[in-house]
Image (cartoon, rainbow, N blue to C red; front, side):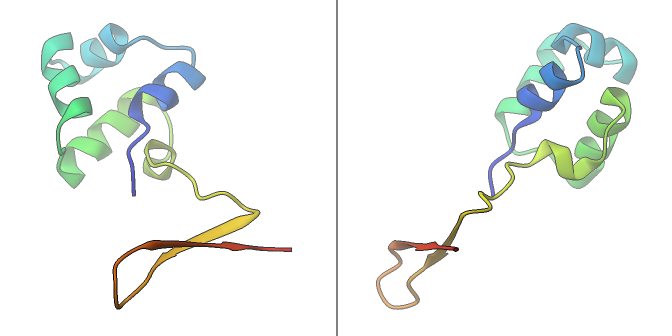
Length: 82
């Protein structure tokens, strides 16, 4: 599951530096979290600073398709939902 933190920030009309200020960290520190592998605690702090639910920080699956991984070879399989 991919993170969409920058998208969530933009959708709420904010900038990275404003979210960082609300979190009381530097914009560079927030960028490192955004581009790294943030902990659940950090994601909760980011969501609180943005004013959104933590689920908004994650890429939402497409509603018209489902992607699963083959248990044998590991390839992605797209299943169209009608």
